[in-house]
Length: 371
Length: 262
Image 1 (cartoon, each protein chain N blue to C red):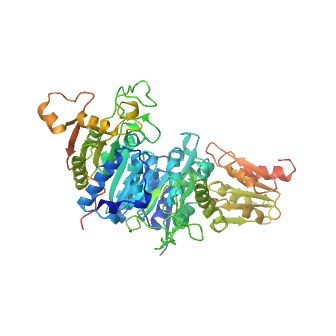
Image 2: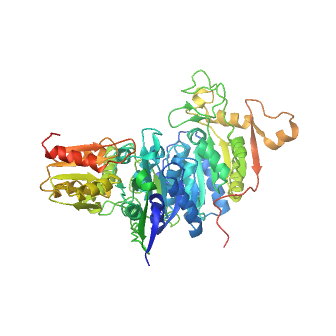
């Protein structure tokens, strides 16, 4: 029996994690993500899981990586300043191919910025924030229902691709309350097991190695150093580093079209909004209004890896309009892939776009008012 | 017996000739062996530095992590699966500089880990910079005129922060060190064993202990048995050029990460 509930977005993230059999949460309180930790603190002990409040965000990220290697599903949640602290160990999770999930309920920055206001200012940090070359998977919910669904899905992607996966919510979604449907169960896809005759970091055809948890007798040496297929450090050979890092990037980038999760509305539109997270809600209102004909949208539920082929699905597009709660992070990514104008409608400060603001952009374009 | 625990295909190791770390790894593996832990149930965790390369030479599951964060990673391993035995190798800089906050909180939680700190007074891997344990007056590449800051007493710090078992020995006291590691492993909760050891290459070269033997002799001659000091001295602390060795505390405060009895 599915059940209906009236629930906050942050709680829905926690519930999505629990539905996906997450049994370990380590975190440090930070607005506006704290309710995720509080809900896990209440629920996990009753399920023989473990909640631990660490001394800081660096330790939280470290603890979930340690937990993940014992074979459990592990998660943390944070917001901008805490996310910055986690960068070091996010890189470690990438290099060591550790499946784990991180919910980032974004707030205004830089620095401590606006703790109680919404932003999408971490979209480039999640992609490029840790040092070195890498690729990651980042999801972006725009409803409380998606907080539940995408957090649960994040665990499957983390296991499948053996990498950290990010749920990039924002304060509006995190603190919003909506009616959601909670299913009896969610699909659970676990990491493929390490075969008996395989080395622990030897990739299979899909570029991803099988996973064996600590304590199962495989005696796996895990390191953040550039390593060979046994896991042994081998950090001074250019070719070794090149092949390892290219594989870590390609295992995700090569699969980006199958990872993509999106909605397309009005494929014939001339003016196409590309949106993710809270701004999706304004875009939906704009496109539904009769006085803005010719508009459509591409809603990205997964922003990274960027599914650039979706932009080609709009044969009549004259311009892409990108409303986001930053000064144009994803709009620049779109510009890299298209030959039509890309209008960045970035907004910061904490307020969402109003429908009228977005309609005005369309009207200006339609009236030949230039770009 | 101990050879079984080593990854022979990883040799030769990266340690300099005369380094004390090999002695300490030997003592820890002797302790693990004596206590009867199984290789499949034991996990070694470390941060970054000379000491932290140790788990890579041991034939178990292991995590060689980020600088200073070993205890945070180890906390995740132990809390997620308390049936695993977790041993952490760390150095003085790794543990008490960048990892200082993780150190005191792991002691406070009294999480069931055994931590062996190879304290060579210096950052060896990066070429001999001063650490939070470099004694006053000693030279390093970042204290060329002699260290001025008061060093940490890591064992006292662990006692104050709440660890259930704390001991300090040197690379000279191999039998006492091995027994201390066994005692630490047998004590539920956070066990901290500080081992003062020689670094002829980075520390000794600049501080008149270029020969490993001279360095070990210095460690031996500077160490005062804690029980003897407590019995005979009227002073709170030993002279600045001496330090206490022995068992600092063994107690049974509440712990985390201990498997529930079936």
